[in-house]
Length: 576
Image (cartoon, rainbow, N blue to C red; front, top):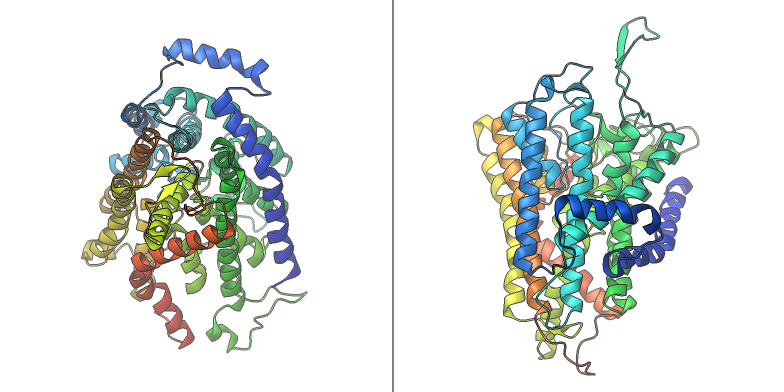
């Protein structure tokens, strides 16, 4: 490993570690005590929103009411975004004169951004107007992240509560999450991005003459303000440009690239401490942070090693595989030279670990094992820090399963933080896990045998099957990244991936809220020396193994037919 790649990884980890506690404490204070250092500025705005929207801030919602409010809010958001995209030709802020998007594409895109997936099958700079982008896409970046945050906080309330029926107020959680957490960080981040060279304007596209003498159009737009929230939301990675964060106007330097990775991990990491703070046992949060960190670092080093090793068929031609002062070595195909293999691998590991979907390199050009790391990160359920809120409640889902299995091994009723984990919670946990798996494997199998869908493949054979599996894994787990070798702007792909995004987001959300309601209604059991402790390193190791075993048993057969087989073919010198 090059010193540059190693320093980047260590610096990123130490920086995230240093901000996890203060930001986690701030989030917990905002969403539990209702106090913030920003109160003098934002409290009048908050109360104005409550009055205008007629929100009863004293209402304590049951899990059913919380779920219905969330679903209704998401449905309205989807319809409004769909209408914006269909009618953008008649709306202001369209200097490019772009026509309205087709019905299947508008459906897919509306579902994508409302569900926090940001799966894009269009080129943003040549399809979407400034107004649609700002009033539709960017707004949903805020809202979908705030929804995930609200669900996570509601789940924590259910775990920490005792004989309570309510999980809080969805509307209050939504408003406070946006006003006090996402908005201030976005304003600060947009200023930093602009200072590093990311463009921010409302100018018409610029027509220039290139050095070769040919005409060229340079896209403009409010890029910095969209880029920061797509990264902070850790679930909406849709880029202003088709090249996403590989575009020099959106990610111009290695310093900007590092800051973007930091933004991806910032809030998801802080939520682990927020959890420990709210349940009055910080060690619980640090155990989750450590498990997430181990999985993240293992993924990065694995992806980096695969990309730096490159393709043996290329090395057999006499091309140097090791990095030197004069050349990077390894597999540089599809990567930006200003980031290199280290910056690209770190970014891709982060974006698939936090369910964001932003990319600074072409995943389709990664080695089979490098691409498999990205797949595995998503297949584990986007819990390696994960999206804002969604990563935490996804990890807590595995915690519940681990506690249940541990209880069975020691012959006692499983307990977590003083709450018995019984048949109802396990059934709901399965309801959260299985529909997503069914979408990934079921749709992938269907698409791989339909002649009409096979025409969308940019590559045949094993790599083509990998592209199909990646597409449905990315959409069903609400990641949004793509291998890019698959042409998915067709009716079949728009509808099926849209369904996968809906199932992946809302079955999990409703199941987790039901678990929160079930646990909140239970009495707390006094601590006992015979109960398996969940705030220890031992439990962290068990949790890690349960995550890997569940993911391995579920997806290993599909991986053996795609990435693993493709790697073996590469070693044998075969290409398809």
